[in-house]
Image (cartoon, rainbow, N blue to C red):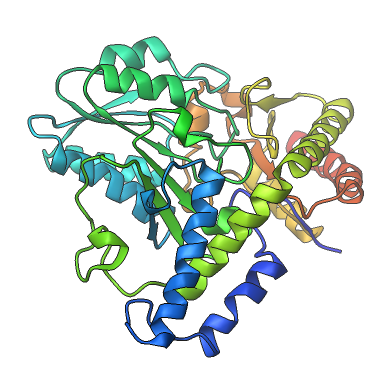
Length: 383
């Protein structure tokens, strides 16, 4: 039986999500912007989905949720909107370990002279240098953008505190929470976060749908202009089936999070303890005391992580080197380089990420297979 441990790349759409979506392809097919009954019924369904997602985020108002095509569009929108609306401010403070959806935009803005970028470093566990972050904020800062949870190590960042610091400097604050939403409790009402990005397929929803939370009163400039959809914050006909799916996924995440978090954390810890006991010269990367419950990044010394992933795949186990969006690169992970992972372990790191679909039997099967793969590869390397 195949084992899927790459849930930070994407999750399986929950069957209840798929069932909720299907009628909106064939039966409730109206355009949500139409004024007749077909459109009004669909508009009500979109409204309900928005409410479910707002509840999961702890947003004060449903209309603070703007549906997008995914996390990348939401990230792009946040950065470009801040630069457009913060007159006299052309600097962005972010981190060296952000997802490419943030770093590639920042690099482009820097290369074209549109913004100055401050990339704040992290320590060996992936924790942000908060002092350097605070020092980088200033009268020219338009936006600080810091991920809620790192997609490769699971390390969590103190975004509520960082948002307060950004506001003290007169800047907006955005967080890429793609990996956090649905995995840990979020209450945006209790923070000063201005914008937050998420993606449906990371929480058992469909691909091609995401959202940008925009706090009421936050200056905003749309990335995609067109019709009056999304209160004129994102033009284009709504992707209704996917929106309904995301709403259902949010509803399920809210209902199951407490139990799922505990169970998934236990699975991850069971795996890590087993690997560390059976395999020498390896280490768990990330902040052990402050990370996502589902994420494990294990670095095996003197071995090629790509070879490990290939062998695991042949054995029916899906895992990854890190971000799926950066796969295929011959360079070691920018996250692990920023953490100054020693050279002997840098290329031997693999990420295993769990979901509520996984079970103890799968962990036990991995613990039967993975140590043997490591041993065999090391024997070949020594020979």
